[in-house]
Image (cartoon, rainbow, N blue to C red):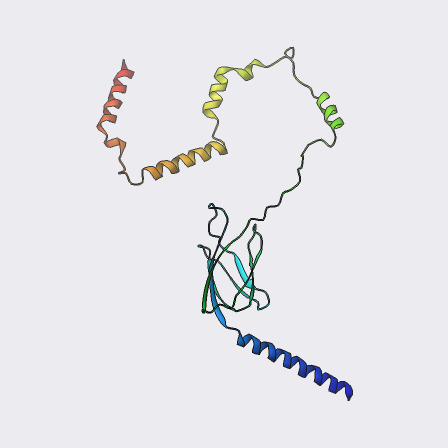
Length: 209
């Protein structure tokens, strides 16, 4: 019987504490907090996707493309402002006389310096020396196939070898640049150019001679 009375007493105390906390929250004024989150440099400017939340209340929001946010808070709420690559900041909402409050917060970059790492294909210097001495370096006395350095063969390879990835990229970027430069210009057909036809007939006459 005593245990049941003790359990009832504990439940009553918990309900009283919860009601007191709810009453205290109702006494706090609701403030519409708005602001802008920005970085210290002019390159990033306004930060998009910054998290602003109240951990105890479980509510929050994120900044838009312009670094702006707006959310209802209570006077005395402790806000956490976090963003990847920047130091976390905290802000306590003051008991502002107005129902609206605007703030500007500048986040500082969180720079982490890593220790120097040397990458080597050989575990020790002795192994590197042994591998270097074991190299079979060709000398002038060895027979070299002169066909591989024939000028005509090299020119033929230069003309017939297809473009690699880098050449294709440069060609594609060049086409994009040319398209951007000529997008507002009239498109002409070279077949209707009389000067091109004159050059064409002149070349035919020269070939016949």
